[in-house]
Every structure is written in structure tokens, then in C-alpha cells.
Length: 165
Image 1 (cartoon, rainbow, N blue to C red):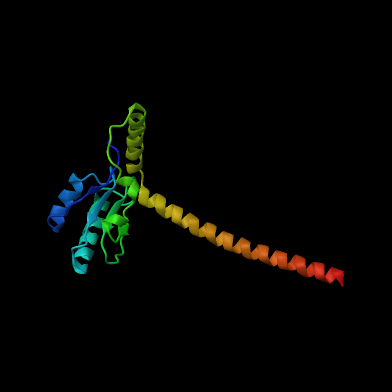
Image 2: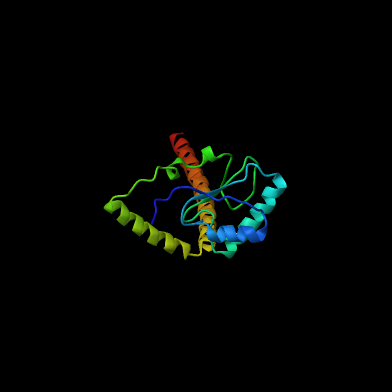
């Protein structure tokens, strides 16, 4: 496996068929990728994002795991994909220079490729939905216990004051 560095996905055409070919030929999910949409209009970006979301779902890809697929645009978008305003805002650790890895690094990269394959076989959307539901319930429980703790502390302070009288 290669060291994971950014790969730019170039869009020559915005048609759905061409986009399907580009996504299937690209290494989305195998390495971190980004699509630069800074020179497109808002309507074109919205259409492209919708088509791209549909195609990634069809190909059983996730925009965040195992490696993210970033959308570079200066306009705000509501999408599954993480977005940044410019290429300079992308995470720096994926822009490292490629050098020949030593034996130990090669072993780690091979293990990493196995982990990537395992992650790609999981039902990531279902797992993330379950995690978000669990997080909401845990936050609700935390808020209720925090209020209960406050009321208990208030009660103990009031009892101390009444005993002193």
C-alpha cells in the first residue's frame, strides 16, 4: 500500500455518467481525496454534490471513512462531504512528501491496508446513526443527572442552614 497522501479528483465534465466513471476510476476511500469546485457556480455545485452523494451511496463509499473526500468550495454547502474554503485549509498531514518506507513502515502500511478493507466492508451509515442516537441519549442522561446533583447540593446546603438555627 502507498503512503496516504492527497489525490485531487479532476472533473472534466459534470454529467452524471461521466461522474460515475470518474468515481469508479478514482481511489476514493483508499487515499484521502479532494474535489476542487471553486470555479463553479452555486447551482452547478448543488447539482454536482447531489449527484456525487448518490454515486458514493451506490458504490458503498463513505465520505469520511476510511479516508475523507473533501469538497473545496468558497460557498457554503449542506452535504455529507466535509468542505473547506481552499486547498490550503486541507489537513497538512496528508500533504507529506513521499519517500521510500523502511521495512517496519511497510509492515505497518500492509496492516493499514487490511484495516481499510475491513472498514470498507462495514455498514458505516448504520453504525454512525447508532452512535449519534446513543450520544443523544447519553447527553440527555448527563443533563438530567447534572440537574439532580445541583438540586441535591442545594438541599444539603439548606439542611445545614436549618440545623444551625
